Image: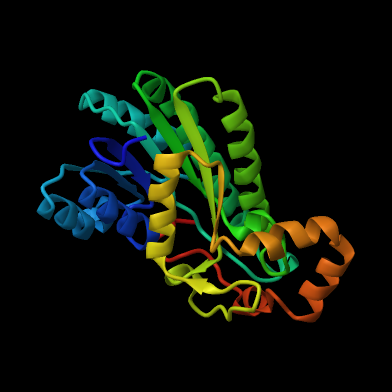
Length: 271
């Protein structure tokens, strides 16, 4: 697709990767439909987008609630808006021992990270099918390629998004709708506050993810790992040497930081 002249719906648009991606895409000449759990979180990015001469439409939506996602699409239709690109960015990353936390915390992650994006894609497909060309970008994670301690539920949600995206791309292969999924390492946002990185999970900057999203819009590559060299350690090595990879991850305490950080739900996510 062209990287300009589109209207782009971005969830989790109020901060972090979502806000930075919205700003970058506005600079490229796109209008933005920004979605976050609280519309007040969108004020800063709205000012930035509009200062670039682009339109910004802000909507509140709790991605854990199907009825709010349905209402979001109805509000967009009522305003007679169309969008060509959907970026499923919203997500949470509770961590810690799987056994040591109330299941409601894990359940909330499943609702926001899996049910929400799948429902939004389902509701958006009629709009995307009506466009000359369109694409769906799902934010997954390297945790969607290799599960580790401390991230049991988060890894499950991101594996789900990888599988969903792969299968959806196959179903839509002969249509004008592209599907790609981005699998970043640890991104330097509030989501990794208090988490110690490892050799296998380098910290990257949000602009690296935004750049990968822009490239995915243009090229429709399918899976994108950020940084790309992680494919050898996160994908190829575990496939060729599964027992060794598991032993190495445990012995080097590759994800001990997530286990010890014991993160709960973010403050702006209602329980």
